Image (tube, rainbow over all chains, first blue to last red; front, side, top):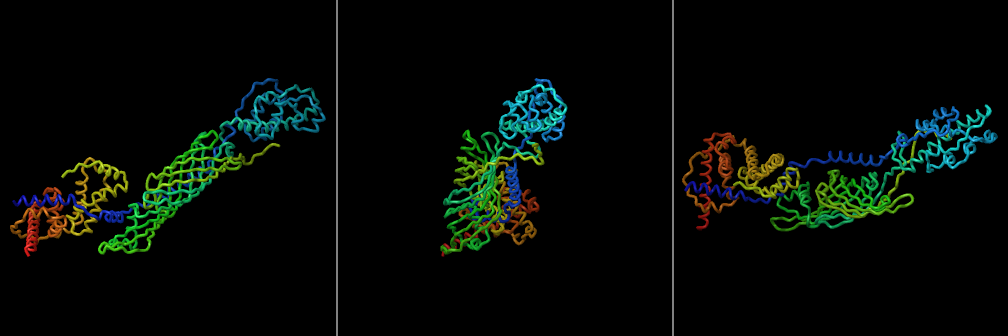
Length: 443
Length: 189
């Protein structure tokens, strides 16, 4: 009997406490978080913000460069005519030229050597005018070699071989000396022209080049875009509200159709919750140091009627853009991820206090919770957009509808929300200019 | 008493292992009632019991990666709470309560009264026990410790564990009987 009572008591106690229910779970969790708060994200925020800024700067300043040495391909031609008298001026030219060994090699080639040969010309003209275009016989090939002002002129190394070569007539010593001087000047001009035409040929044939030190590519275009947009935020339990944002982005062409785009934008996100708050927001309200929280423990339960969340944040997107049309960037689609750094977060609570004992409501002043630089959300939204580009003379204008789908919660109160809207972008194409510090052009 | 973990509980624990805070919160709230029941059996004061429960959950979150999801979570949680409660009250156990060494009289306790005891009634009954007897009763009768384990946990001899358990049972039955008598007298008037 005694044992049955003991067993009965034991079993009953076990059964009761196995199903024990306590309504203080919310408060208990709050107390637990107070005692063991979440790790501060400020330090993480600092490092990720720095990394994002460095990445954006690197994308902005990165411009592929070219080297002449990799692009110029010298084709040594077979000598077609006997080489003419040695031109002493070629050494002078070599000393003068800045183009490196390629041009000097070209000068040494038999084709160039034979180009020094002239047809018999009027001596008077030789004395009076040493301009290249008057002394050389004007053949189409020669004309193209002589041209030194049009960079886009097609150049063929065959032109060197096509120069009309005539055996130099017997000359007096004075004429020879004169010719040597003329030779020198002309060779200088020719070498310079050849050098320029090589560049033009490279441009025309669109060869891939690597830049020498100090030179910037002519060909690669880094897209720099300024944009501004309007969008709606959407979240469960929240009214949709209109918001604005603006920023800059830069794009690096990866292939003909794919471009890597990264940027930074300042945006304001506003959410309004009525009667249906995110759980984390309610807990944050009760945990905050305010009179509502203190009255909570006195048996008064705050009834929150409205929450206005206002977040001023930096949006750091990294997207891949795909061009759908043949014309670059005419129509495109884009997808990627966005990270967020919050400059300021303000949460305004409108609530009434309900006294559980008397079952009555009492209105209270709005409670505002502010947070600055409290959190950094890495890759928390998925971005989709497509764009239509209108190409202008100096700039391109892009209309880009977009949507941002949340992959997780955002902000210090962990609210899950997305956005959808329209961006208006101004694309200023940047064609890098060729720069060569300290260059000496031969005139 | 061994429960097999359901899929949702297993998934919740898996997510907690990944450090997901929202899953930790859900786990906490799911087992909060059970945890408080264990805590209140050992600790008189509710606030202290909550503190014990929260400390226990922190230990759970910190070591949940070592927990085998195929096992039931409740026994593991209970063990942590019990150890945490005992650690907290350990210093009080040095002051043993000797006033109850007299033998309790033979009291008639109706079984049907036991069946109607609520959680609050049981806690009131346990509150009447001295600290050490409460601990021994909980550990041996409700949490399945052997007298050897009780002795090691509370750092008392095994024989003392048996004695304290016997005293605790008698006190509880006495209290129940007294309560029954009071209730009968009220009904009679």
